[in-house]
Image 1 (tube, one colour):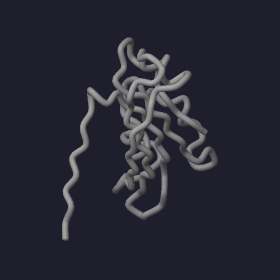
Image 2 (image 1 turned 180 degrees about the vertical axis):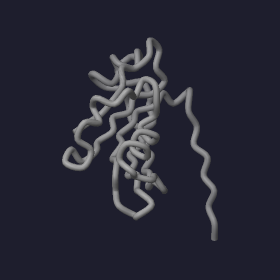
Image 3 (image 1 turned 45 degrees about the vertical axis):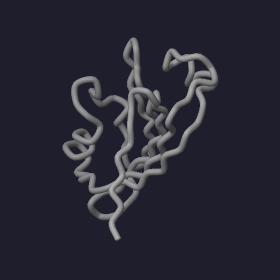
Length: 112
């Protein structure tokens, strides 16, 4: 199952969230315009979000993504793939996001 909201008139990103349908039945009817997905998961499904693994790379706008973001095909985008885990270390959400590169930056702290 995928859950996504209608993008705003001039979006800077487009994200699609995938959740297991058998664990989150009814979430497509949640009032996500008034509350966050994380708040809904915590309140309605007793799932506490703990951490995410993310992969970031550069890509170009193509097809429907270019149209949804209002950019020409071939414009640079950041693509972020996330696996979001619960406090029980169980994968809960897979997110695929496309971000206008001029509107987003990435901060990385590396520890030795």
